[in-house]
Image 1 (cartoon, rainbow, N blue to C red):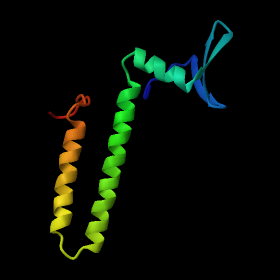
Image 2 (image 1 turned 180 degrees about the vertical axis):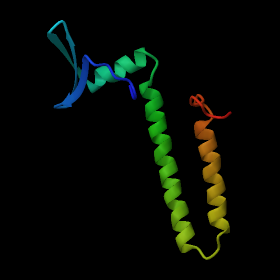
Image 3 (image 1 turned 120 degrees about the horizontal axis):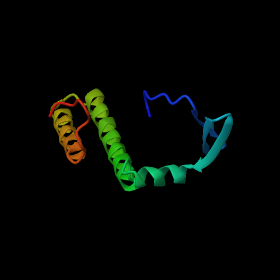
Image 4 (image 1 turned 120 degrees about the vertical axis):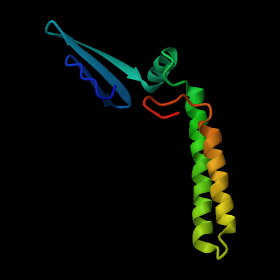
Length: 109
């Protein structure tokens, strides 16, 4: 939780696990969570379903490849018409990728 400070709570990573420790009344209790546990908790809380993460990762890879192709076209093509078409196609791809995302807080409509 970015920007949230919980004085009695400590979260750290160790050997591929996330250790969550809380101190209360002089006693410390620690829970070790695997990444699969974290994903499951996030899904149960409606934060980030695994399928949505996989879809976004795939979309980012496609977008990355297309940006690389545009960079190649911009540096190696004497005729920039093809590069302009690539840029417009990238804009359409990005529009389609974000169409089903919820608005970010504070984002203009």
